[in-house]
Amino acid sequence: MTKGENITSNKELSRRKQHYVYRINKRLFDIILSIIGIILFFIPGLIISFLIKKESPRGSVFYTQIRIGKNNKPFKMYKFRSMYENADQQLEQLLDKNEVAGPMFKMKNDPRVTPIGNKIRAHSLDEIPQLWNVLKGEMSLVGPRPPLPREVKEYTDYDKLRLLVKPGCTGLWQVSARSNVGFDKMLELDLKYIRNRSFFYDFKIILKTIKIMIYPNSAY
Image 1 (cartoon, one colour):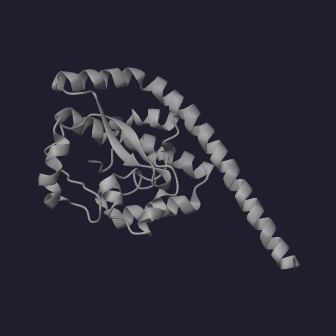
Image 2 (tube, rainbow, N blue to C red):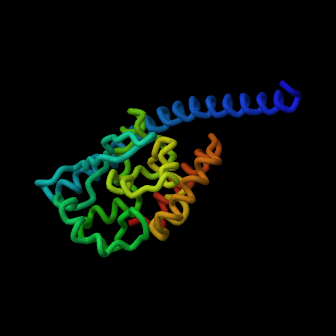
């Protein structure tokens, strides 16, 4: 091995070690902060549950949905229910009203969203149950948005690069343009995060997320 090859090899070993240390720290960070979050949001969660049940007594408080995680692995994601009970059945009728480009559905005045759902979505409070997904190791606090199976079916090989890491409760897309951009821009932001992810970067995104929960951006 030449001197140049040895330097390159040492740099690669150093990079891999840093990445391994980051992954370990990120998991510890996820566990600690998700437990803290569950404790802090316990009372608000009970209030949200009461309001959802009061608005539609026959409906479930929680909504579960199959999403695609790291390495194309499906998992069951949890949310507070923000739509009417038959929302999934109505989706096919609304696809032609999609307001974003690409394999993702977004509609600003979605008729499936309940009045309480509108309020908790604006402050991202419907995402609180995903802290359980974080504890289970299916999600991270910070990462790309977990896509639906039908969305992944339309992915190109390049699009699938966003599945190289665990999906997150929040991410660079959520604290940037969010609902104002289409899939291509979201993908660009996700890949930017994957390339530059670090403990400091994650912490910065979490702080921005807290700010957005208090002062909502364009979420819908």
